[in-house]
Length: 244
Image 1 (cartoon, helix red, strand yellow):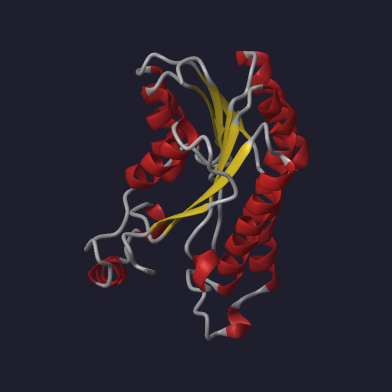
Image 2 (image 1 turned 60 degrees about the vertical axis):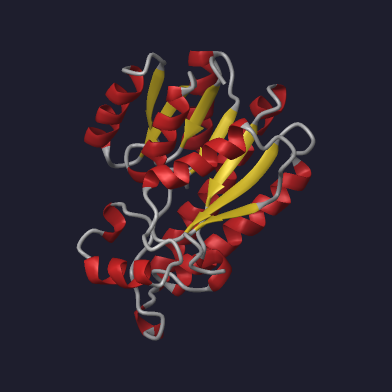
């Protein structure tokens, strides 16, 4: 893994940051992508470079195809290659599933733009460089895409679409590039801050008795990237057995 290069979207905080640090520990140079969290992105950069690898900080909205292509071009210009793409950037709005009127059109547009279009734009922009290196893509989706549950109906639909895109790309980018999805359950990130009752209830209903940490998801993503060389088009759940 040492000397390889990864682009990780939404990597200033949470799951994306955990994946960036996990790869950096193995000697992977990292492009840290963010759209708003600049302060956190700068801190993540310090932590990554403290591990002895190089990093590139790039502000881009993944739903903007031009910005995405610029990010990939600058990554290759800086490091000379691209081996790994992790599509982690995502958005949601918390809307009760039964409240159909509250699920506004703007919420649909936002989650589809970032969670589906953005994921595809990044894969498309990176495809030719990844093929040169026999690289891989990991898409961070959600068990919501498998169950229809989650923060909103629109969010669940976006993650189901992201899983479908994963499978389609696994076919068309083979044999040079593997494309897989990691689908977490609820994860202890700032998305769920202030919802301790909800977290406790879900944890109690899980065989392993807790919710996931960002590091749990990162370890699974790393395993796919580093070791699962004959796995593509798969969805790996990281939910503690919640949806067995």
